[in-house]
Length: 187
Image (tube, rainbow, N blue to C red; front, side, top):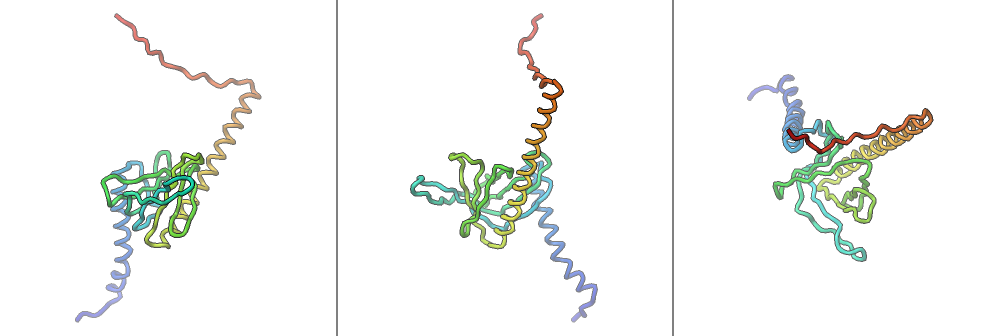
């Protein structure tokens, strides 16, 4: 048959890279149809299953939700800047969760648990990953995003407080917010 040349070897070696780039581009288009603000895919996991902590306080139990599929962590052009999306294989309704400083993460055995907010009413969810290395990668990525969001939130608070303090020291009052009158003139 034919000889294996250097050109053929190079072509074969580049095909996996081309396929990976094609898959990323195709997934990005799908995600942008769901959310036009999606700019980039920061990470993904091939198959996840969603659970929710239910039951009573004295006897909590994990309940499987009707959400499973490929998970993506995306960067967006508008606030909130980051979002987790699961393209649901079980129904036409996909799952999305904004990722900001109110999200907390914890790994427990084979689940990556997350909660939004600190109230007792906050829902605790768990993601089961079929590939444990994907769970580690996603946990690390989400942890970095959340930590960065906490830093941004802290800086914004400091800036607001410094601005208010400076305005107070200069004797400048906060501008009054205008309200539109709902009355209309009759002719």
